[in-house]
Length: 119
Image (tube, rainbow, N blue to C red; front, side, top):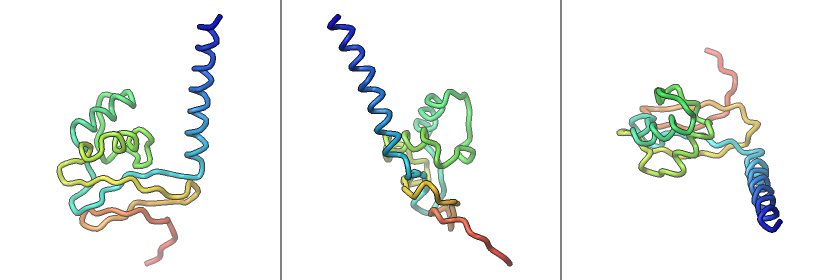
């Protein structure tokens, strides 16, 4: 009986941790950008870890949504080991309700709020 109660407590703790994470994420969106001149890119090791987490065999860096939670996790967990050859990746936090876009100049990126533009 004691073992069963320990398992139930563990299961409840897991649910509680998941719920805490969901509550923490509510209202916040995390986006991965390149913070230097060059361009966004993952290291081979980071790309392999991303593919393993997502359960896919192949992907191109440019096709990965920048707010993908698995991408954010890989960059957060690996730190500078996740950086591609000409990249310095950074996680930017913005309000979840913002309609956003990534803008760049010579590969250095920033997150901007989408708005209307006329030319």
